[in-house]
Length: 287
Image (cartoon, rainbow, N blue to C red):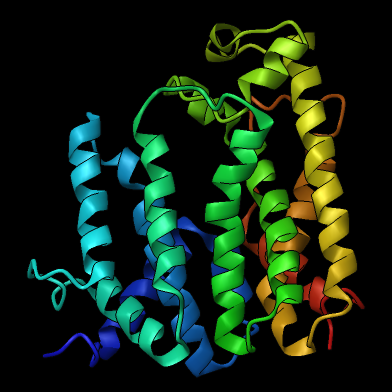
């Protein structure tokens, strides 16, 4: 069987993978038509596979090898096994059907090499670069599935991704700290008189709180810009940006003075569905 004829259960596999590990994006696809939804789930399943590589390895080298497999696959290198990988098969079909830029997908893989090491995110500029090539790229790729690409939509995707990516850094601060990983820029910590060691201790201090609050403010600025830009894009593409409704809610929670980022309170799937459904009834995301 060729990779251009991905089995129907490949689509089901991708849907299950995204539903399990990225429920917000999964829920957003429920508001998109069937054929387009299949391509979106392929893109998001690919992202799940790449972003979780570091969870499956104890040393960087095996992780590098896994990421290289995806880089080779995207480049069309012959290494076998693609037909047996439902995510790869579905992704290649989506690339062909929707003319997705392979360069963007390859850069996403490359950027996630950072996850394999314990180097702290050094600066805000570094975080913005990382998020632009990951979360922002996903918004841009997904938008291509439903409408023709444009500078306007890419501009929206960039700010949407920055808002979502920064919110994710805040939401996973405690989990990452337990692994001695730091995505909260070291620059922010130092500006407020803190260190990565204090973050790894997992105890909230006024200095860490100040650094987190600054990142919340940065994310909120990007979110506000994205929501403003959303009003001027075709209505068909707005469901792609529904995850921003969840980001908006999460930033409100993160900004609360009594909120401890080291003690996250997971949001139920029902709440996520309700948040996204309500968003579709508003001017921001409605047709």
